[in-house]
Image (tube, rainbow, N blue to C red; front, side, top):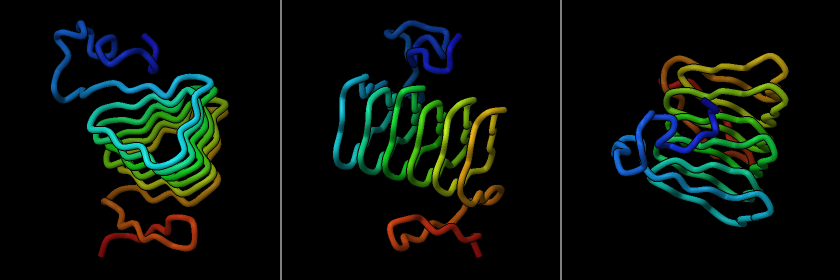
Amino acid sequence: MSVFASASERSGGTSSGQSAKEGNLSIVATGMRIVGELTTNGVVKIEGVVEGCIRAEQEVLVAKEGLVEGDIYSRQAVIGGKVVGSVQADERVEVQPGSVVNGNIATKRLIVQEGGEVNGEVNMGSPAVVKHGEGDLQLAAKA
């Protein structure tokens, strides 16, 4: 099963049996470009380009050809493409082989697979406090 499978395929069920926790799956398809903030209460998969902040209550999936030029806020994030911006995930961030994150990461758990690249600061463990700085997120440990 692929990490970029549909929400129902990841849960092992059908779309009619999809749990409320899984949320809805939204896709920014290949060839599509979104400029502005993207917000969802479920899961969003980026196969195209997003220029702006992404806020997903459940999960953000950046596919191999996907590009995000902005910050990501979610419970989980799986990066298979490129992110130029910071990633804040309450639970987990996974950086897959061949993918690049040019920005800071704040999360409880981080997986960087061989061939994955992170160019920025990493803050793990206790939840991080995020301060908006000059065009980039600045991470500080929670007091």
